[in-house]
Length: 367
Image (cartoon, rainbow, N blue to C red; front, side, top):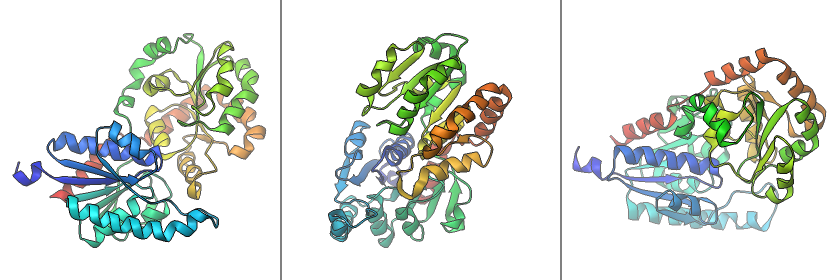
């Protein structure tokens, strides 16, 4: 290995939500395995969760003073041009000091200014788009970067076709062998063996609509003879923990052993963030998606639809839960054939080597 190769300098930028931070960390970890002496720097938005999560993962991070554009006229919006100019100026300063060999963007506000400046300085750049419908930042950057790694088909509507490589989204490696561990998972969660298990996921902070659905339909779900692992999110735990006293129901603020929870589940109800969708494809169980209607550009509905179009999941819009849930869920529980079909079909969409394939593309830019 030449001296140059051992001391590559790599900047990763992305954040605002876990969905943008997690892939960036996964990519950095894989690069570090291949180039143990490389130097890494993350660039994020200075008041968002990446400023805490990235150092926890063992990497240095610098923050830019940047936020997204709100949909309405607010003080934040009036500040936006100043924040953008300030961020572009600081991004230039970071690039001049660090002198990266490659820049990787995983979406979110901060990656905009950084990749914009990197491209203008001729630094090889790659973006990783997690969603089936790209955000505004990545659409603007697409013309400037060398490569775009995506997780869904059909993105040539938004990006230059010759730059697109379909790799999938980075997911936790511990999910890749969950099928072996069902018995251990049942013990770990203290579940009744032979009884079907419903896993309910509302994201790390929780999803009010999904929690309200569960509270409303708890009797109905118990009549279906299910046991329930309910991850309600840390914002809602105090409100819903009383249901842990209900027979066959356990309420968690957060689930640390996600691979275990997936292994125990027979059915899953989940939001449709890009990372969750990619994980659930690997897990290969029947899923009911309830996309969050509150995310930019309605990403989650589009992500879920990309799976539903392949007859690989069920989608219930949040506003239809009261009318549709009982009916659709009873049909699913009643048909083991349908359960198997959904499980098999969603597994076909799994892209298990995403992180390695993205890093293969980064290596080509480094060479």
